[in-house]
Image 1: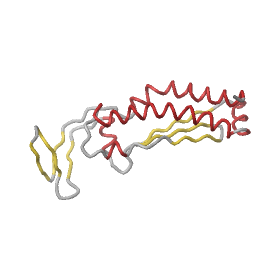
Image 2: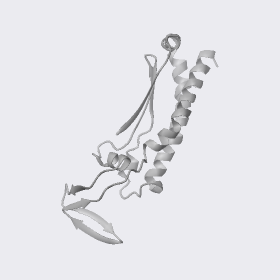
Image 3: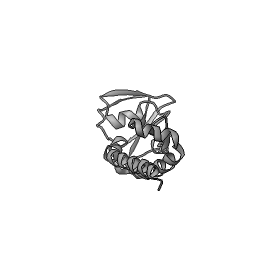
Length: 159
């Protein structure tokens, strides 16, 4: 599961971006990084007990650092979580209906009221949406747009 932002600019700003990309890149990357760091911290909190009680920590550890790129009159930022963990990240984010889980190794291990169980298959109840990943992003979209605008304007004004 990954998150991507792409912002297109006006033709006049496009010409500016293509003639002085290094100044724009530096200013925008600096501002975007601070915004991304704040909502990445919220995502880490969500994955550390805020919304999800971690068992192994693999989902939390899979949260990438932001990748920020600028070029061809667009600004793009990517943040990923859950790569290589199958459907698990999206089932927690968006919820899932009742489903069966089959062991890929010898058995599934889980606890119920402190007692440990081992099974080859379990019938999992409905999973509610946790919104651990996108909720912080939703609240930061306007802030991110403002940061990009300010970064471009600073570079344009030569600050």
